[in-house]
Each structure stands twice: as C-alpha cells, then as structure tokens.
Image (cartoon, rainbow, N blue to C red):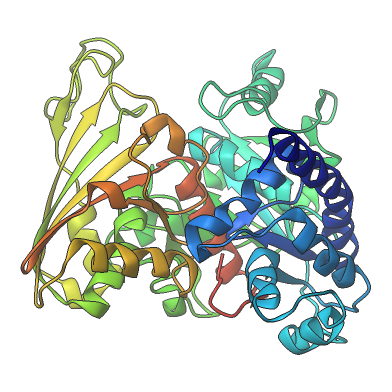
Amino acid sequence: MSPEKYLLDWQTSQTDAETIAPLLGQLYRQKGVEVLLFGRQVVNTSVIDLIKSHRLARRYTGCEVSPTQTLPLIQALTELDLSPCRIDVGQLAATYWKTNNDESNIQDFLQTALIESINSTQSVEARDVVLYGFGRIGRLLARLLIEKSGQGYPLRLKAIVVRGGKGGDLEKRASLLRRDSVHGQFNGSITVDEERKAIIVNGNYIQVIYANSPADVDYTTYGINNALVVDNTGIWRDSEGLSQHLASPGAAKVLLTAPGKGDIKNVVFGVNESVILENDTIISAASCTTNAITPVLKAINDKYGIDSGHIETVHSYTNDQNLIDNFHSGERRGRSASLNMVLTSTGAAKAVAKALPELSGKLTGNAIRVPTPNVSMAVANLNLNSEAEKDELNTYLREMALNSPLSGQIDYTQSTEIVSSDIVGSRHAGVVDGAATIAQGKRCVLYIWYDNEFGYSCQVVHCMEQMMGVRYKTYPEFAKK
C-alpha cells in the first residue's frame, strides 16, 4: 500500500464514522435501539472511538470490518420499524460481508436477522430508581443511567439519598459527579437547583434527599413510586437491615452493591441472573471480584472441569483503607494504602459458589491491596479435570468473549503491553490476559484484569434491569451485553 493510500483510507473511515454518529443517536432516542460494535457501546461516542471500535474486528474475527461496511447496515436499521433492542452491528456486518459483495441484500439480511423485533408491539413500563449512597459506585451508576436515558430505556434515575445537607453540599455532590480523578470528566451538562435541592444532568431531574436512615424517607412526596432502591453504602448486608428500605413509602425493591449475607441471593449477571424472580424484593449484585472471576470460571468449568483452585486477587486500594497509618478494626488495613502492599482476606473465592454451586468447596482465595486507585487483577491457579494446552485454551476464551452468552462479561486481550491503567473504563466484568496464560497438563493459571469500579457498575446495571423486568432482545442472540 502506498503512503498516500493510508491517509485516504483514514479520511474515508472518518467521513463514514461522522455519518454514522448521528444515526446511532437517532436509533437510540427515537426507537430505543442500542447499537454495539463487537461488544462496545457506541452511542454518544466520538468519531475516533467509533473507528477504534471497528478495529476490534481483527481481534475477534481475524478480518477487517470498516465504517464503510457498517454504515449501510446502520442506515438500513433507521428505516426498519424496530422495538427497543440491542444490536451488535459489528458482528452482523462481519457475517453479512462474508457472503455478500455489495449492499443489495442488506434489507433482506436484516429482516431475517431481526425478525422478532420488527413490527413488534413490545413496550416496557418506565420504572423509578433511587441511589441510596453516592460514593464511588453510586456516582458511576448515575453516569451509566444518564448515559442510557432515552425514549426506549425505562429505568429512570429519580433521586439520590445522602447524609448531610449543610451549605455547599449540593454543589460538592454535583462537582464529584462532574469530575473524577480516575474516570475523567462527565460527558454532558450538570446544573444545580439549590431551591428544590436537585441536580439536573443532561436534562434529567434528580432529587437529592438528605436522610440519616431509610426511616427518614418518604419517596412518594417526590413523586417516586414502586422504586428500585440501590444501596451503595454497604452498611446493611442482610435481609433484616436492607428491609428497612422496603418500609420507606414508594420503595418496592432493593439491590445491594456488595456481597449479601444469609439467605440473600448473590447474582453475577451472565451466570445466574435467572435466579431473580419477579417477587424477589432484595437481591445482592455480589462483589467486583466475584463478578470478574465467576464468568471465566464458568467457561473453564464447562469445557475442562475444575477440580480445585486458588484465586489470588491483586486489588487496588479502597476508601475502606487508611491513606496513612492509623487505627483500623481490620488486620493490616490500618497501614498506609498509598505506601504499602497490604495482604488481606477476600471472600470472593467462596462467594463464587453462591453463583456457581458446582464449584462449592473447590476454591480458596486471598487478596493483596496495592497502591493503585483502580483496576485489579485476579490470578486463578486451577487444577482441571482434563488437560489443556495454552493456545487451545486461549482460543476457547477468545471465542467465549465474542460468540457466547458470556460475551458481555468476558473480554480478551492478547497484547503483551497492557497494564492496569489500560483497563480503566472497561465495561466487561473481567478481561482475560491471554499473553500471560499458563497451561501445563491438567493445570492452568489465568490472569484476569477488571475495572473494579466501572466494570462492576455495568454488572450492577444489568442486575437492575433484570430485577425491574427490563429484558431487551439482543442480536446476534449470543451477544448479551
């Protein structure tokens, strides 16, 4: 290829991506259709990010898929009468262009591929959501819910509940949502209504409710009814404590963003979300580490069988630790998080069994907290029931990341240059580092990166949707993002 051709190809991709961007917004806001590119959400993304998302085709399919190839499919989607759904247009384009040389069959192809969502009367009732607590996870959940807000998306963030209420508190809450040292600036507009104690985010009115306990809150006075309360505080983790939320007028269900205790169902979306029943009122979304490792462990167990294993978690420090040495009720956690690797315990390995009972009693685990603010890694040292070879194992995991019901939870990378900061913002529960995989006989070691804040928050949103009956058809069928 001549040097000039590289620039011409780039300019063509840029022009096509610029045409695609407004069509994605049109599909989402007018039809409720969320477009993905090889698992990456592309609504509201920049032109450059659109082009980069297309380049993922080489990783998964071994061939190029360009904006020039996806553009006619996206244009055709705008002409179809579609009910709300999720469409991975990257995968559909890869399938279409394998057997077609021009655009003449696109309409027929899409009519067949999307038949269940064409001319459908499916509709989903709008449901209110309240965030109880507005810390690291709470603010990321707010970002995700605002990002998704549109005509076809029924979960509406109506309020956040926090302690405080002193002068300047509202502006500080808004500022923390607007700017984040790890995840960057919020992509949108945030204003404050001091008189009504509210934050307006991209046109979404969010009531700020000041309360010291659930007993202090009557959501109905704010026009909030039958709401899902997402408890981000971790103060209560059993049914007795979390039931306090259900006593608040206007609250209907509770989702805990931490491992639940006792008889509370711990859900890892993609693995056991089917245990959520319509009459369940309290559910746990488990922990970030449990969400990161369980989908990968399920994939390995399904193919090779797991006899036993140990999970070592290398975890970024959290607000639970001290910035400098000070008293802490937990062992070692009182030592400076910014200066030390801190060996501590984790219940994630045992918690896997709550979502994947076939691994009950087979796993042990420990954790090392390290001086990084976000992104963690799980090292899974597994004894298998059958032999595995590295290339075969990696090929299988790469396929699971694209062409399986776990594709929304498992991502895969073969890069030998990736480090933790490269995983910031990953929407997957875990990212398998194929370059580091070790396999020898019936033993393997897997390295799984995960954004313990953002990736976990994406899993929480999936659980919220499941609890509130928001179930979109996803195309292709296996691409459950």
